[in-house]
Image 1 (tube, rainbow, N blue to C red):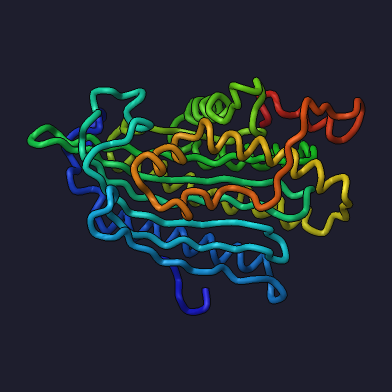
Image 2 (spheres, rainbow, N blue to C red; image 1 turned 90 degrees about the horizontal axis):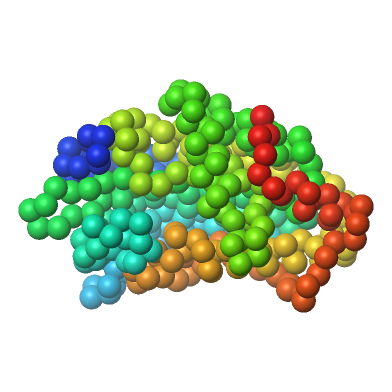
Length: 323
């Protein structure tokens, strides 16, 4: 990092009213960001780029108060674009995206903290990946504060390697195993349902795990589960990059990658709650939209050639039990 490293009860009520300001949370999230940046720079290698460290702070009087550190790579040896961001923000009222399923929280002040990551490799045989872990606290006057955790990771391949998808899902399952035999199955199903483009009637990728509004089992359990997901990402995803980064590719593969990246953009701008939360709450646009790939294409009613590798990818997308 060039010497400039980035740094309850079952209902989620009351037991940890100051949790967003707790050093334990901040220490974990900033350390996770540093580990992820170090790992990405190691894959880029001595001939690759180091991530640009962009520290920011919302100006006084802005709708959203807070600060963060966005680490960006563009035009790298391996990663065409990627971002690993830490943010800690607060606002006077939760945005609509956060209260759509919990209308009883409308009008509450909030504080949120977390790490988000999106990596877009240049090689079409390397998949795109997303990971996010976060904590949020909502307060209103003398009412009991409400806290919850959220997060997950998911994989978006452009070419079909079933063994890579199995590895990704197996790592997710192992990370969640200590939290119950049914935990992985629940959060895998949630991921399959969440990362789905309703207007296209197709999945964004091959899934992973996803959870939100997590408060069951108490604060310590929820924080531990969130850490397990954040810590597992490197082991789920980076071995796939190491395996595929040297695979030869041509214009056809890059063209298809750009087309499928269009689905990624559509999901993030139309359906993703995290993107909507950031934009609706007056967050920092550059950091929120760091997830978008640099080169994207759209076509009218395009279909893959039967029997092609591109068609096999489409056959792989529907949810299934990978492990």
